[in-house]
Amino acid sequence: MEKTAKLVVNGKSYELPLVVGTEGEIALDISYLRSETGLITLDPGYANTGSCKSCITFMDGEKGILRYRGYPVEQLAEYSSFRETAYLLINGELPLENELNRFSVMLNDHSLVHEDMHHFFQNFPRRAHPMGILSSMVNALRAFYPEIPERSEEEEINITFTRLLSKVRTMAAMSYKISRGHKIVYPRHDLSYCANFLNMMFDSPVKPYVIDEDLVDALNVFWILHADHEQNCSTAAVRLVGSARVNLYAAISAGICALWGPLHGGANQSVVEMLQEIHDSGGNPAPFIARAKDRDDPFRLMGFGHRVYKTYDPRARIMEKTCNRVLKKLKIHDPLLDIAKRLEEVAVKDAYFIDHDLYPNVDFYSGIVLRAMGIPLNMFPVMFAIGRLPGWISQWKESMEDPKWKLHRPRQVYTGLQERDYVPLNKRG
Image 1: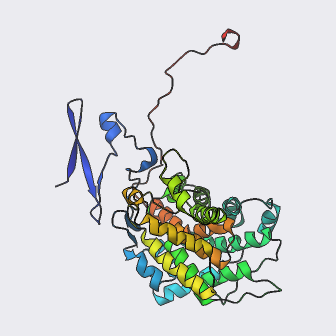
Image 2: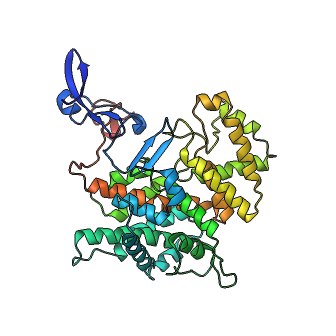
Image 3: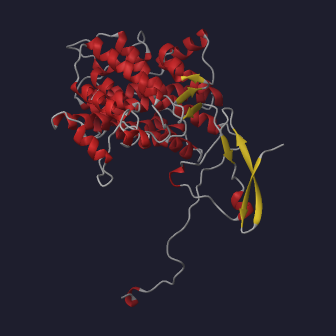
C-alpha cells in the first residue's frame, strides 16, 4: 500500500504520495499539488526541495557520509584513481581491467586540442579569469567537434564524455601557460591523467618537470573528493540548463560559471586569501574569530560550515592527511597551515562554532595542498571544475535518460504591484 501524507487546506483534505529512497530518505511528492489544490510551495534556496531522483551520489549531512554509486569516498580516495572514479560515476560500476584500459586509450586519443583553438586563448585579455576562459572554451568545443551522423547516438555520447574529460584538463593547462607567456606543453601518451596535467602545467624547455608520484597521488585524491556532491549549485545548473535539451558542452559551461562563485568552487581560493590576510595582520586568528561571531560584522571564516554537512565534512579529514603528507614530502613549512590548524583547534571546541555546525570543510585544506603543488591562486576554481566534470557528466546523462524528464521551470510567489493602467508620458507627474 502506497504511503501518503495528508494536507488540509481550508478544511479540504488532499493525499500526497511519499517517496522513500534506498537509504531511508522520505520525500513528499508535490508533483500534482498545483493542479489539484491551486497551491505551490515556497522554498527559497531549495534547501528542502528535491529536484530529482538520482542513483549517483548519497550524502548524509548529519552523519558526515559521502558515497559515489554506493562506494564510500574514503575507500575511493585511498584505493582508486580519478580516472577510475570518473568511469564509475558515468557508467555506474567500477571498470574491469579491459574497460579501464579502453577508457584510458580514449582519454589519450582525445587529449589534444584543435590547433585553431589556440587563437581563441591568445585573444583573451591577460587579466581574464581562467574560469571565464574555460567556460567560453568549453562552449566553443561544440563548434570544433560537431556530431558525426555516421556514429550511433551511444558512441557519440561516449566520445563527447571522454573528449570533455580529456580536453578540459588540456585547456586548463594551456590557459595557464598562455597567461604566463610560456610555450604550450602538449599531453604525453606515456603519462597518467593526473601526471599529464602536472607536466603540461609546469614543464618548460629550460627546466624539465620531474614527475613526483606523491604529488600525482595528492592530485588524484583532490579530484576524487571533488568528483560529485549530489545536487549542489553547479550540478543543479547543469541539470537545469540540460533540461532544455541543449548540447552537453553548453550545460557543462553553465556548471563552470556556477562553480566560479566564492561560495562554491571559489571557496578554496577564498580560504587561502583569508589565511593570508590573517598572516599579514600578525598571524593571530583571535580577532578574526571574534569578527566571525559578531552578527553585525559581515566577515565570515571561509572553509567552515557547509550547506548540507552538519558535522565534520568527511572529505576534510582526507584532505588534511593529504595536506600533511604533501608538505612533509616537499619539506615545506607553510605558515598558513599553522594558522589553519589554530583556527581548527578553536572551531572544534568553541560553543559558537559547535552550535552553528561550523566544522572545517574540504576547502579548508585543499587550497593549501594546491598552493604547495605550485598551482596559482586564480587556478584553484579551475582545479575544482576539472574534478567535478565526471559528476556533471553523470548527472546530465542521468537526467537525459529519465523517462519522467521535464523542462525545469520553477514557480514564484508574485509580490509586485497589481494591475494598473498605462499613463502617457505627458500626464505623468
